[in-house]
Image (cartoon, rainbow, N blue to C red; front, side):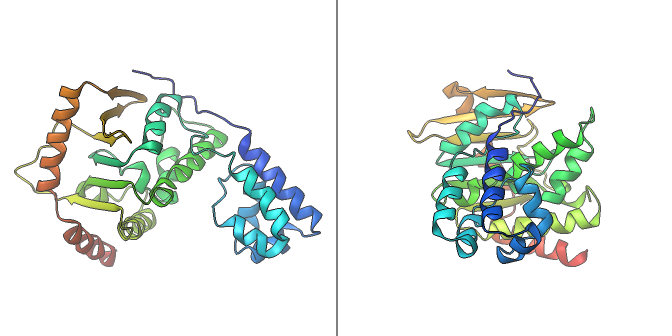
Length: 275
């Protein structure tokens, strides 16, 4: 078990931002001139150049349209030095590494919407309410890290992502109506990916196998399964085959008890329409 909450930091984001700024300056463009040409706001570009936003993958080809192929190749090289682990708490890093190499990821959550499914407003609502309070810079690092980690859903199209989420988390209204709208829209959007499956556990379900609490399971490239538990800034990796087998059995039962992906989509659309 590890309990160190301090986020890992990296200079790679600042380096990427400095490279982008140098290329933009070389082209004689201000942020206000460059931003609309790559279809982002000037504020967003400023934060990328400051190392305060993880750059989206789409920025590279859009930069080529504006600055040319040589500049895009330089920026692409800088992009490849980035890691989804920037800003993650150290106690989470081992699991983050396992996630990146897995062929299947199973998640059950009853306390908070899984991090891979959280839109930015929901992420910010979480860290705004975190206790003990964190500085604005630390909060920003955490937001960057979580958004970057979500690239797994699109960067690994051959990995199967399955989520079972309690309906109570969607009904709670965490962060206010605007955050809830963003959350429902985001989950519906992720549900459209062929490799992403979301199932909601209904509010009333007499046969419910989730009373042991949240859990994650990952299937490695060599088809071994690893379990993961976390709570209160601590985490446990579970590798004992017998214990992992029990977790897999529970997860299979949970999936059978939750709404189907199709019924989940219908419920999410109804909830979104009611807001």
